[in-house]
Length: 93
Image (cartoon, rainbow, N blue to C red; front, side, top):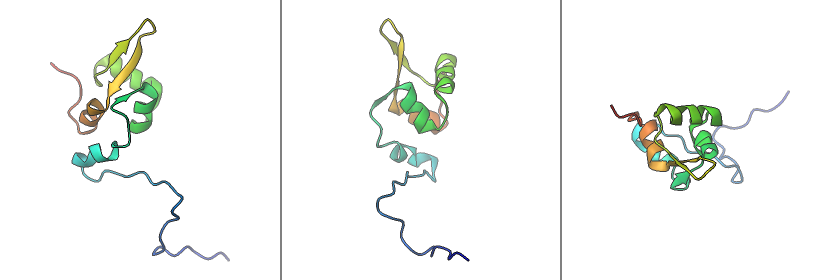
């Protein structure tokens, strides 16, 4: 028989716990650790989706982004991600 962990005990200090936004307005606080400009991989990690999905959203105009150089690398502003997460997407009609 194994003993159940005491729920009142604190979590180990060496464990990283990602903050979770309970209120959509707190989304910026959750992404505060990210750089001002993100790669598609960083954006995918923040949104918890795949890199291909991020590219599709950028191509569809749902996430505002810029493409640079001959390889057309995608860069996404953190503020654009915050707007998307708050439901104020990137599409403008």
